[in-house]
Amino acid sequence: QVQLVESGGGLVQPGGSLRLACAASGSIFSGSIFRLYSMGWYRQAAGKERELVADIPSSGYSNYADSVKGRFTISRDNTKNTVYLQMKGLTPEDTAVYYCNNRNGDWSWGQGTQVTVSS
Picture 1 (tube, rainbow, N blue to C red):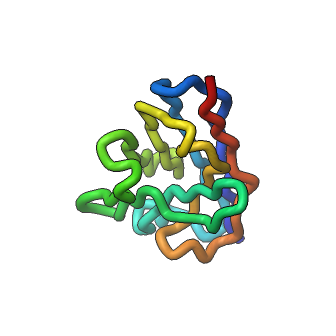
Picture 2 (picture 1 turned 135 degrees about the horizontal axis):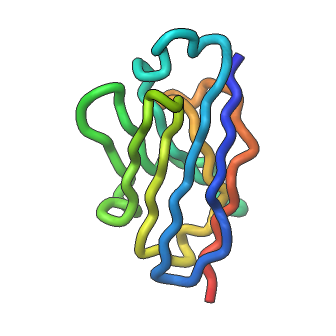
């Protein structure tokens, strides 16, 4: 059983920044297992399908969707079982509910955190 809790969303003006956090918990993370999972940040805008925007492996380079490359940075703190998404240069097109999950997206989804970019 995995629980994912996202936080850090809010209303921000175009060009602004936000930092999202996702805390993972559950019995599968006993020991230091979390560090072995590739993790991802996803988003779902109204009326659209959920999309992967960034992922971070257990080691190596992170990957980004073209739409966020150069503006978003994914990171992780394995001591806290937490994944972060630093977002800069936000545009109205970034408005969505943001979720985290493993890279395959096959854990139960959390409630997400709403990001609204508007003036």
